[in-house]
Length: 61
Image (cartoon, rainbow, N blue to C red; front, side, top):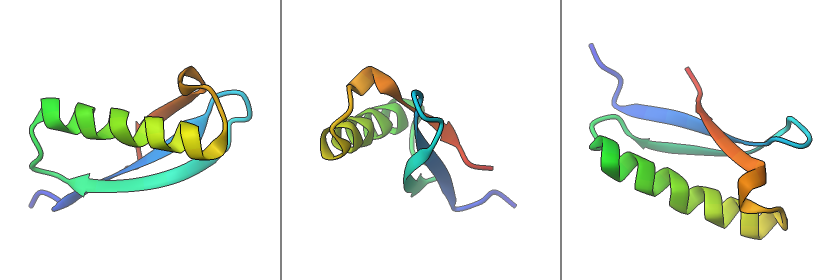
């Protein structure tokens, strides 16, 4: 049975700390998933006052 959602954590690469968690539908097409994660990454960077390239995401399994 496949999970209904995927969980991602957004990490500040300079500190190594997780600064945001985000959940998406598991059946989201790959292109839409990437677009959603990039949008959230930009929002997280802006709200935390860090450069966009400082943040990356990992799927939380």
